[in-house]
Amino acid sequence: MAMKLTDIYNIKSIKDAARLKLAKWFNEVEELGVDNFYTVIDTFENHYQTILNFFVNRATNANAESFNAKVKAFRAQFRGVTDIPFFLYRLMELCA
Image (cartoon, rainbow, N blue to C red; front, side):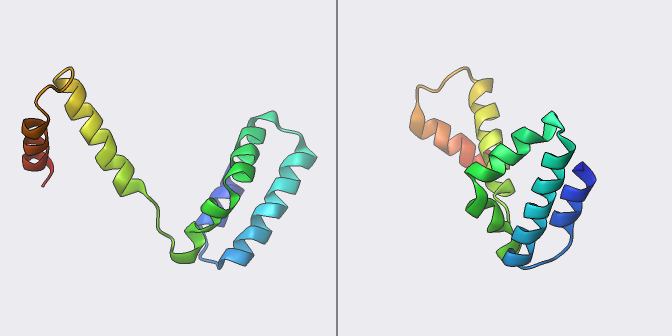
């Protein structure tokens, strides 16, 4: 089932076709009764339109998430920030 879901994302398709394929996948999961995938289905149900927007231009926010993780790691390295302008300067030097 996990591979089928991966295949839906790997095959280039339009938003409506992806919606149909995902709906079929949901039905298969419900027929199997595998509890592990119910969390995935709940996530899809809560963020359906946002997830389907991936199929419009196949873009994700992975770059922004990666940058956010780098900022958090940099901030944690110094155990808090007291001088915000200097922190932003160091961040700019590190990531620019």
